[in-house]
Length: 516
Image (tube, rainbow, N blue to C red; front, side):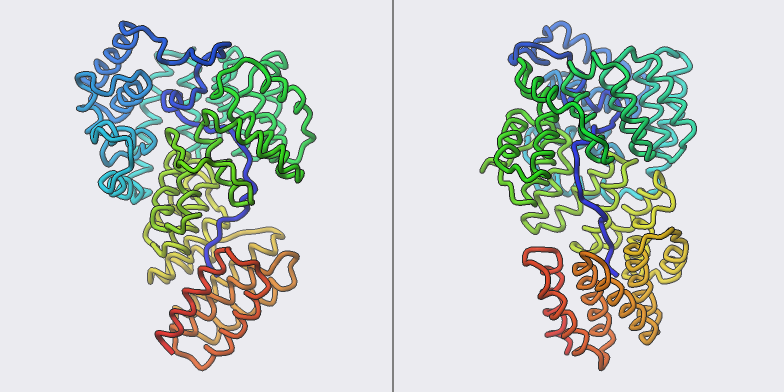
């Protein structure tokens, strides 16, 4: 079949980044009562002392992570032109840290817009292969181990070490590091949100929820923690208990950035309940000074008919997911594929950006190399994931890597997930066609299509499988092209317009007109 991005039932889960990469979000700032107070209140001498210390570390070690610290501090402190900052920014070109290196490009270009040159640079980083990425992640683990050995009570670095292990799929060391971070954190918001996100990644929603509710005084007073609690409860199907406390926090005297994700989380609940007017009002509040997470949630809501974004396109630091969704709405599939890969590099442990990146690259942008990279990267932290293995096999088959595709489709293990089995069956049909066995390929595609028609809400799956079956018949110039196209027409007529099915159907029509 085609690759698939899986479920897209988005909630405002807390992001998990290294702590210094999180400074742009506002998550590390203390809660304040006056909106005007912000990072800019740092005195000039304090700001220069901080950037000077980062530059001294960079000059001593000349490493990627020291350079990233310099760039991040320069952006946060408004010292982009401070002597030495440009030198550090130059070392980040081609790095596997796109969340920082994009900002470095903006420093070097003296332009906050995404020019063609910057997009080209982003594309080169999006094509970072999994082997190189794994090597750099391994180096980061070693570097962080050395830090926590010398600073054993540094909870922020223990959280960073947990993240680095999670990216590499090292579950037990990651769990130990995050436990240590929480034990040392004394209720630190950043640590608690990071720990909750770790447990969500591991599928332990009870543990994630318990981390946030262990100290109720912190939870009901902090909109960042409340946003995470509501999102995790929503995602896991638990009873959502603290919406009234959340609304009270929204009515408090907090800067808009501090309540952005809480407003988004509550807006999502209202949207799912069908209370559109309330949802729109809350989204508007979330967008007064949005985090990139809230911006992505607003883009997601646009896909569901709520137009809350202003006419002027909004940006936020590290807004790769929002840019992915924005580019998809505009049918700019190449840009969407690149941004999705950068989203994946920003959240390299998470399954959602990996599945989106591989789906967009393989199915909509038809960039099979980029899709393969996305799958291989995603499988490091999510080994054996059936969606990523299917998408990898699909992309490899389209790229002519048939033996690799056979190995990966054969390695998929699933219990009783009928829909994922039907996806695998269709992808097996593609592989059979590319092995010059059209009879077997035809049988497998038809088996998948029939299975989808028997599934609840299986119309899209059936239409997708039919489209890709017809594509293979056209490619083979077989006598089955006309029946396959007629089946595509009948199945697509059952699907509302404006979906990916429409795009693929029109491509199929173009292919058939050129080859029949």
